[in-house]
Amino acid sequence: MKKFLYAFLLCLFVSAAAPFVLAHFEANATCPVMHGERVKEKFFVDYQGERIFLCCRNCVIAFRKKPEKYMKRLRQAEAEAQTKKSL
Image (cartoon, rainbow, N blue to C red):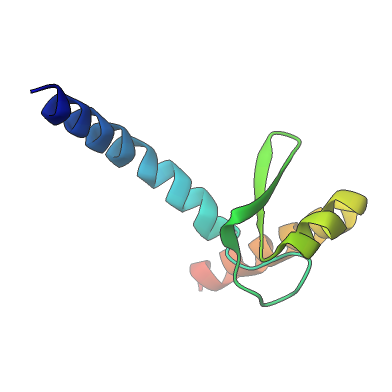
């Protein structure tokens, strides 16, 4: 019975958290350091309360050295994506 309860609670937690995680992950779908590269969930940096996904370990290192430069690129990419969605 305990195993069933744990499995049920785990499914409940995952289903509740999935929309938030997927929505955020989808917003940052390409790497701000290496343009056009798809990001991977295991490579990320938390910057000013926001989780930024990157494509590889080297991009994590590069982002940490010049975060403002890459945040600017990320904001530009997000603006372009919003423009495409509204058309």
